[in-house]
Length: 342
Image (cartoon, rainbow, N blue to C red; front, side, top):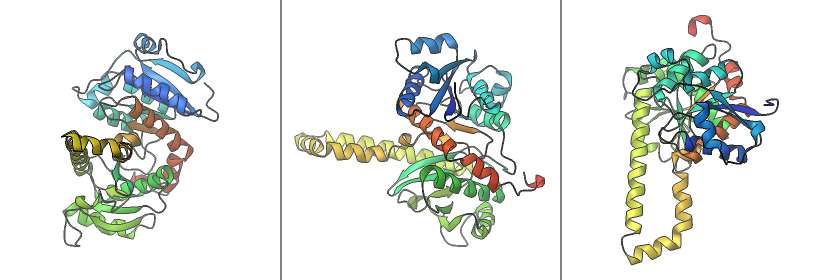
């Protein structure tokens, strides 16, 4: 593959509920959408090539990298990535580590992907923790949750770095000028919060690299109250799962209501196009996967039940990440950190 003017992504062909069929289909779809993309399908060669049979694609931009093992979601993440060195997750991340790929995408075990990113890809110098940055839809567009589940126990300094990295991502990848950063809390008053938020608040307020607007309550997030939501991975994951659950429930209720009787069916037919477009904007899967911010190479985790379109979006997301030089910007941002602050 010629990688001079293109972005190469190693894709875990064996990870996720719908692997390998939907994963491979997503790769082919992404190759059609972007001429700047190369894909390396990582997995059991005979299984992957069987999925490619009869498909039309540019063979010069698609290759298969052998990986004989698969890490399941039931396995202990750290133990699994250390014992299964020939798994699709480990092999794919080694390709990034060795510079043979710019990014790695997987719908497989979240824990294994996160652990592998830290161990095999490694953090940018000066970065203490690598947060999982997940985009969620709001009334005004999207906002980023950092951290959405990678680090359940953090320090105030970590939250400051999450804010800095989240700001870079929203500005470079999403195009939000001077993104508003808020610290998740149970209230907006100064005296509210736990020890972590109270200690992090003045650090964020004093940082010149970000546009900090103070505390934010969860109920204000869907209304677009901020562009970057900073929190530890425990709270972030709780917010994300609740958000997804409520969205799914509301979608189900809306569909059920529109099919209730002849009147609602006629109304649904009249607004079908606009309704479909509106619901699409509130589907988090439309925005691709969740990148681990602050690593030496890009690692993206997609939903375990990802289908072709989400896989495609995640691959295209990697192209944007690379071309906008997000990693390089973060390296410059943390270059002044002393070794003791790593």
